[in-house]
Length: 142
Ligand code: CMP
Image 1 (cartoon, protein in one colour):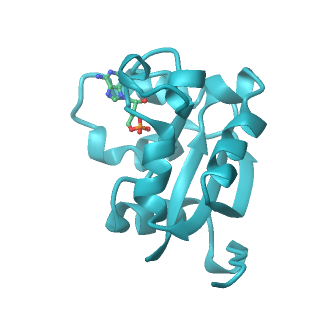
Image 2 (image 1 turned 120 degrees about the vertical axis):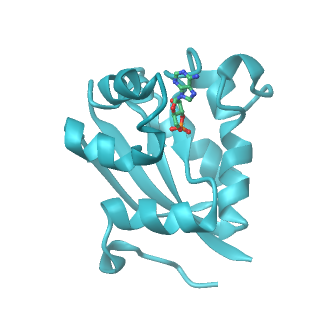
């Protein structure tokens, strides 16, 4: 099933010059970039994005991290894009991620883990709409 997912190259990976490496893994893994933009999130934007985690002990630190520098937000499209993208990202904790995955290659620890991907269709719709309008999504059809 064709799906869309929100992908973020986080500040650690942007700073490490890993944007191309990460997008290459996603493209070679069968996903298409249908929108992309580099932004610097302020605290309000990052807090809204991660609102589901606001009661977690790491929330403040996560917001510090996500606002420390620019990120690349992209929309990826493809068959089972949500699960496929998460597979290519690897486990949240880079220490537990499989060889060849984004987080194994580019992540540092469970917080500074290089990439974010939507985890379900409902979150993907919210997350894509949080950064992009419909007319910015350039689907290349089926
Ligand atoms: P992400 O996929 O963007 O979703 C939430 C983020 O919170 C996660 O990646 C990590 O960057 C961060 N995170 C998750 N668990 C922890 C944790 N135990 N400690 C610190 N940060 C975490």
